[in-house]
Image 1 (cartoon, rainbow, N blue to C red):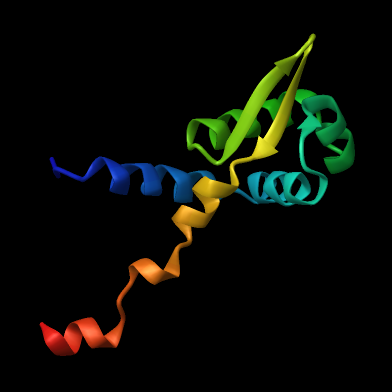
Image 2 (image 1 turned 45 degrees about the vertical axis):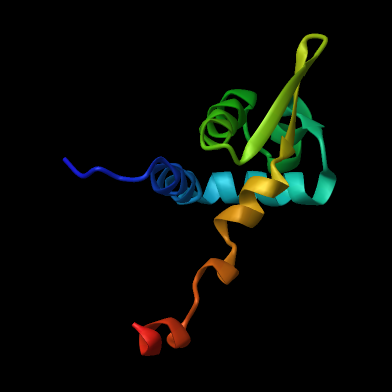
Length: 101
């Protein structure tokens, strides 16, 4: 078995979570609306609450979505810091690195 750095495993989990079109739509809607309850998000996406809840849980487990309890509802929001870290292009030094090494 590979001995992967935990940060690398977290990134792999996040990219796997992003591989589903419904999850991408969910993230896009959260990006546009900010914090939204699951029922409202389901209505916006024309999907069942159960389906949205399932996909939100996958995104939350990957660290891409945060949730908080608000009475009987669960409110969801994007974890912007996690998305920015996931797509931080500055972590790749580019051609200069290859020329030096």
